[in-house]
Length: 118
Image (cartoon, rainbow, N blue to C red; front, side, top):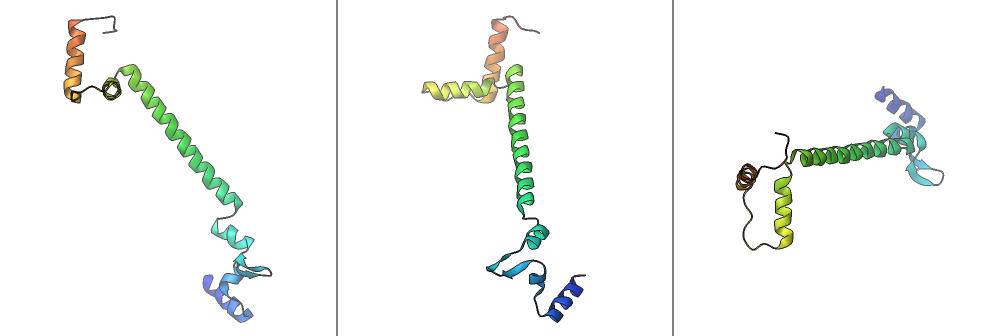
């Protein structure tokens, strides 16, 4: 089909790009509306792509917040909070490794049981 369009355009003395809506206009060079629609770069195409990206960004934010909330309920964010506290308070000693932190945390809970579900 493209070959026939090119042949028809040559016979008419115009280029294939001009017949597709791309090329010169009365005011100068540019892309015609037909070319923009064919390429998917018209106003509707730009709006559609932006809204899909916005939706993906919003879904990403929601998923991060759900993860943060679940980690807070389960207590698995305790090490991150420990590191933040260690950095903010300016402790001079090196922070515990994650493995050491969890060992200390569970040992403390065993030594000093408080109200918990299990």
